[in-house]
Length: 69
Image 1 (spheres, rainbow, N blue to C red):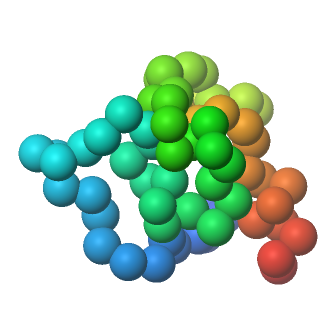
Image 2 (image 1 turned 90 degrees about the vertical axis):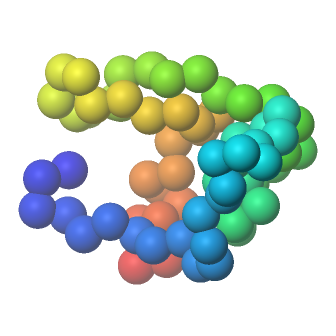
């Protein structure tokens, strides 16, 4: 959302030459599921966002992030 600060993921970004089958950010994501670790999500239009803002995720993390507060 415009004006909203992004949450940071702890650790280092994945190496682009050593990305496995799952979501490259899953090992650093405290909300990751088995599906995240084993399947790579495809890019899709972000919910409630401007046209062209794409995300690759199996589920919407906004409720989880908002709860942390």
